[in-house]
Length: 286
Image (cartoon, rainbow, N blue to C red; front, side, top):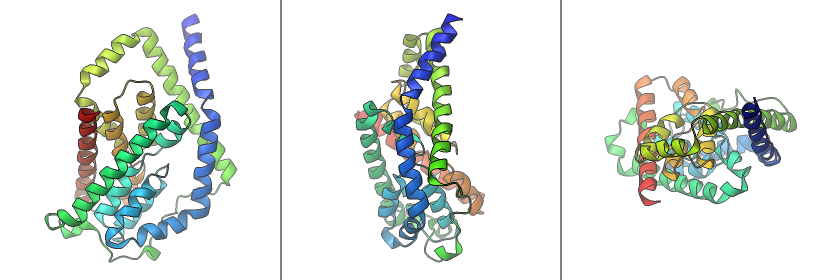
């Protein structure tokens, strides 16, 4: 009984200290999404041939709202495949707020964001220009559609900024608290050295496995990856791979807005290959 109480108390203390940072981060996010999302949509839709450049930068903004927006625009042939993947590759869902809530992770956060931007720009440049002739025209996307015909805000919450911030902070706090309980239990029962040895033994395969986790179209994937990295159980290459493929609900929206399951499967596989390759390179270099 004392062991359970210690696990719960440690998990609670580790989670509560993140609350002020989480609240501030989500308030800023909700403010931008409520006040400026339509303007950002216009920037994304009007980027033209080099639309992947602003797309890569916009994708860095926390949450997966812009990845869902990009998926809708791609499904309506408003943006190219390179622009879509630039957003997907730089989207980190809940990872950025979680890292912001932990000052010890700020340096790593900047490194992850920097790597993701470079990967997104290089991948989009290759897809939209260098490898364009090898990609079927039906998959390339383009500019034949109109952004005026696309409703990118159909599922946007109608709560005010403060209520939405409180809801989001609470939901992620619950995820973090539950994760800390599970991790604390595993460390207490199995032993930290055994867990660390098992993960270290996975070595090269960490980015491969993390990339698969990132494909889960839910915020739980980015929360899990970020918390494992913060706990020292996931390598830098692993977290890069997982967060490069972590497009959040954008993948689910893509499968709904783009009717061809073959195209969607190709895009998801391409996202996974690029993200995993980036993680493996980081694993070798870092």
